[in-house]
Amino acid sequence: MVKLITDNFWRCIIVNILLEKERTKKEGLIFKEPEVDDGAEMFRIAKDSKVLDMNSSYCYLMWSKFFNKTSIIAYEGEEAVGFVSGFIQPESEDTLFIWQIAINSDYRGRGIATKLVTKLLKQLKSEKIRFLEATVTRSNLASSNLFKGIAEKFNTKYDIKKCFSKEHFPDESSEAEFTYRIGPFQRLT
Image 1: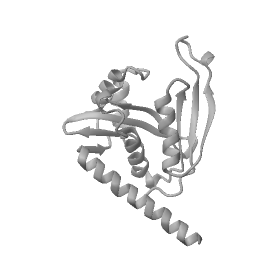
Image 2 (image 1 turned 90 degrees about the vertical axis):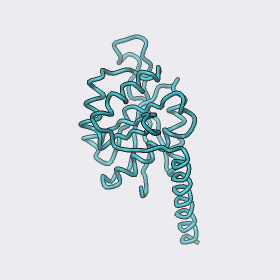
Image 3 (image 1 turned 180 degrees about the vertical axis):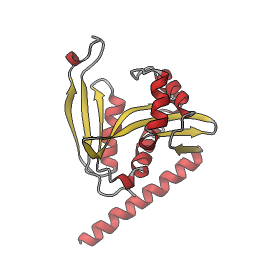
Image 4 (image 1 turned 180 degrees about the horizontal axis):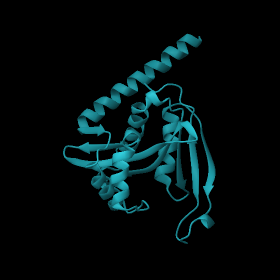
């Protein structure tokens, strides 16, 4: 009985991967590690999102050069349409922290954010990542649903804890941030 459940689980995973590849091929999306030239595109996408906290253009250039192994960018043809930036936590080497996710407004609602996170996790399989963390505000329902969906997609748990209270921020317009911790991931193939 256990073998049958395990076999069915892996069949479902394989079917989902094949379906994802077919959808990606139809959409013409290319996923890759960012290079320094992609930093400007990451900055543009973040700025155009009008929802992310903006960092300097220098920050995105640094991210695309020095954190490129733990980040990913999606292109459709010549147009950059979304990215995920992240890093492996120094105190917890089995945890990928997602810093920012941004998708061009014309491409939202297509599951590209989920594909980016999934491909990034698979890209990092040699790093033995077992957990994913990100901070999300209460008002950011899209990110909340994304991370809950990632937990469901990988058939794992998620936990939400307060990370930064409103009082931690020097500007009054910031909201409290909650850490979403997803995992453990069993096997990222």
